[in-house]
Image 1 (cartoon, helix red, strand yellow):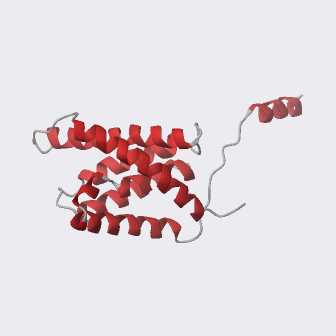
Image 2 (tube, rainbow, N blue to C red; image 1 turned 90 degrees about the vertical axis):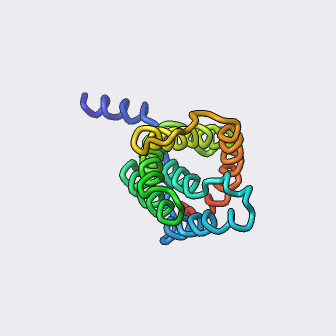
Length: 177
């Protein structure tokens, strides 16, 4: 009787694939994103609208589906981005920690391979990231900050479109089964 119950239970469960990457792929992608994020706006000011460290955190969080590693990656990426920018230390660290944790938690429950879902998830998590930053600036730093603007909507769309292409390129860092 126990065997029948366990076999029925196993048939009803869905297996969500956890992706594995070549050694050093996460570190390489993280460092590349941070360097490009720091240098690109110097030469192309319009590129400041992209948040490459957020996209890398989001990609690995959705792919690896482990909340602990998503949290740690988000923390590391955010603090390194803080150290390379002129923002208070911890601002991006807190926001990216939250995004990394939630992306890893959600990644195992929904399809993250389809371009439309990648776009939608990026727009959602970009909004969460920016909302966290606004909340920190308003409550902890006592700085006036708008909740929503046209620039925010444009940035969310641009990061969403960029994520579709970037995630496709980063899929090549995966180990084949």
